Image (tube, rainbow, N blue to C red; front, side):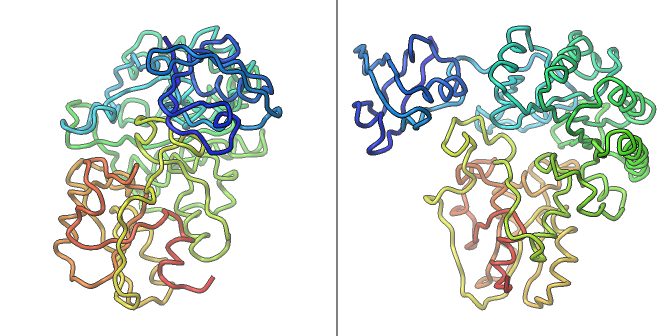
Length: 454
């Protein structure tokens, strides 16, 4: 049976006044068995609630009268109360297959659940999508959704997903767009598989059949040293330049016909190709910021004081799987209970970040005139391969780097590499050999940490 377990009750809330307690299980709400937090939120907006509970094996019925839209005052244990719809694709480029053994069990869970796409921004291939799902998405307004496309040629998509439903499932993409559901698309480009002429064909098909898509990001294949797929390899510089050329040509086509560029390449492509990043106005409002599109320009604007509010970012890779914390059911990166250290205020500063982050931060720090600040790139030996982003740094590699650094300095670490105060390898900031300060992963927070005037 689908049950939502209560993990917190807010004092003075309707739930508190009605006697609902932590560890109560919600069996039904107004006669409906709940499948997920989406239905929970919709139903608890109602003024009159009849709630059936299970409290330690005892059935209880609670009736609550409140104002329409007034929060019930309950935090539940998870976003999905029934089973997460797992992925039945076997993509050779899937990063979950490239994880080393021994990590938290939840990290190995592959989902293909449109509900988690709506709630967390996860990508779904739509291969397990149904007519009933379409009806629910449209009726309940579950928009936007993020969809993994990879290729529009049915045979190529079947091959890439290793699923014969891969090609046919794109009919759901068309249906969603016809019902005005906002769609953000993604293409993971694998060298010699869906680049070149295949990518051209994919973008042409999207222009002809799916051009109402809100955005489409082109991201490079990530390959860890744990990959066992022989065809999977990183892009060469020449291949990255070709991808950028294809994307830029199609941007102009979309711009002429739609008034916006729609398709964008991830920042990583510009780093691989050694190219300058586009200007901020190029990014159509940074719709795909969380997928690595426009991060550098956004950070630059924040750091330079051009904007005074940080871009709202997701909780990071795999963050959702451990449950449904508050604030939009995104996992908290660094809870207040996590240990954060601070050295002497006037000490030299070292900024710990991934290899890509080091390359993008260098010109900003140089232009700031801060001679006592240095950037410390952390090589990701844990994942290896071409993994160089800060969000996949682990405690083990950070610790090895810090062991070589002088004591008594201030060391800044972005919170993007943490989820619930832990690194992916299970270590915490308290396990590191030197004190670190955990700061938000945005230019405003870095500027403040460096003591620069706003």
